[in-house]
Image 1 (cartoon, one colour):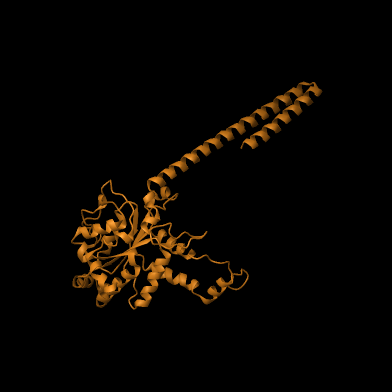
Image 2 (tube, rainbow, N blue to C red):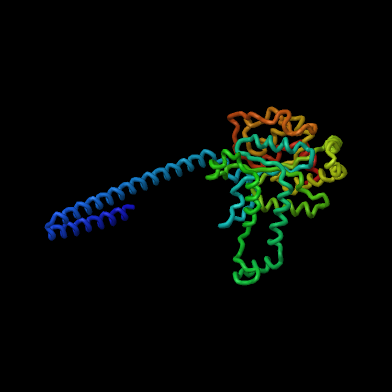
Length: 369
């Protein structure tokens, strides 16, 4: 800006001097009018440059202040770094994608296991934004990405990434597909419309989550279950997983029977619960196994989850939300929670917190270890 100012002033001074010299030679009234005009132009040019300089300095000062504020917030919320949420994550970073930059909370459950209640209990925690069912979007993403990533033509081309051939493209970095999956789930888990413009600048601290009762395919087996688990671990390396079952299967069956469309699942409830226990084991320290037959009766079990996730004890729940309890719909009972204003995320290590678990997970440990 200073260079621009010097150059501009230099040109205006030269122009003024040249005109004044010419005017003296002309020794006429018209010559002095021309001089006056060019002096005015020169002064305007100088003033414009000074204003531009001041504006640039102000803009630079505001930029520095904004950066300082961001650094201050970053320091204040240092515990919000992904490392505290996913200490064991393996991230394949590239110029395209940083898979561990976003934290996720995924609830995997069977139907009629209070999964909606669990979802919005978690949504009540500060800095957490949850959404409901998504028609097995994880499975659809796995199919879409596998469609290209596991194609033999694509695999051969990636071993010799030449641009100009039938399957030609430059090398796709490892981990790049993770952000494709993450962006889809972020898109269908947006903030409240009134807040979207405010959050567009930086929403990276928010823990984005969702629940799914369609994680396991009805005709799947251990191999297909492992495939979808591996896909989630690769695509969402900085995710915590809550696997939710309902051990009181008689009550679960009775709940299914109240809806004719769900009755076809009654015969597979026991098998699905067993498979989800295996899934929780496959995720290892990344997951916690919950039993809604326990946590809906004992708030301490759910508060152990809050602690395991890394939230301060001031975030412990005192009341249980109610969604579709007894099949009465989603607008009856307790549907909102008022959290302690001191409630905050303080960070936590899933490995250390693995000891904080529901009774069900402890019971299953010896079986699956």
